[in-house]
Structure formats: C-alpha cells, structure tokens
Image (cartoon, rainbow, N blue to C red):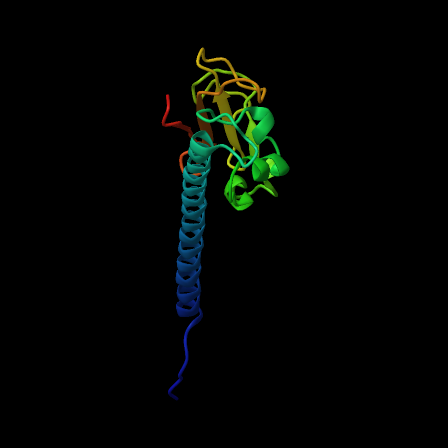
Length: 169
C-alpha cells in the first residue's frame, strides 16, 4: 500500500517556518513605520522653520515690524498659527500621534537652549518652539523683539531630542 501525504513532523516544520517568516515581516513593517514617522517629523520641523523665517522677513498681513520671530503668545494655538504664518498648513504643526496643532506644537517655558534642558521636553507627539530675545531670555510677549528661535523634536528610532535653530542666531 502506497500512502501519499505529509507526516505530522513535516507539517509542524512548515508551520514553524511560516511563523518565523511572519514574525520577521511584522517586525520589519514596524521598523518601516517608525522610520516613516521620523521622516515626517523632520519634514514638519523644516517646514515650521521655513514658516518662521518667512515671518521674520515679511511678518503678517497686519504687522508693521519686520526682522523678528513670533513670540510664544503669537504662535500658541491653531488660530494664532494661522494668523501669524502665511499659508501655514496646520498638518505641519501636528506631529504624528498628535490630534491637532493645539496639542502638538507647544511653547517652551524656559530659555535653556539645550536638548536636555528645554522645558517642556518634546515627545514623539510634540514639537517645542522656543523664541528668544537678543539677551537669550524667553520671548513670550508680542511686544518683545524675538531675534532667534529653537525648535525641538524627538525621534522614535533613537529616542533622542534634536534642535533646529533659526538662521539668525
């Protein structure tokens, strides 16, 4: 009698190999998603920095003072972002994982200019904007001359905080 088919051992080996391949592909997919979100963060920060430089050069439709960056009061919240930045896309101010620019684009509360010292610390779902006066103090009022800025963001791949500075440091 000639039997055809697979033995239980052969089936178990095939199932085990399929499980290993599936696990590897899921892990690779997760790494690709993390890398994609980090790329989005870098692009967002570059876009925000460009918007800040445009504000520095041309101000807003209602501004008469040029050559300064917006204070925390002028850049805090979606309504202020849209009022301060010409043609600003709120999606750029909303990091992956944040629900809106209101929760994703936060204002610094101190003037410490280091990635470990800025407060609040950025997370993977927040960007931190730190406008500064010439003497290095935090620029929180629209009447103050904000001569430079730092943008802080955190990447998922390495868990480190990075800082992007204004062109007019």
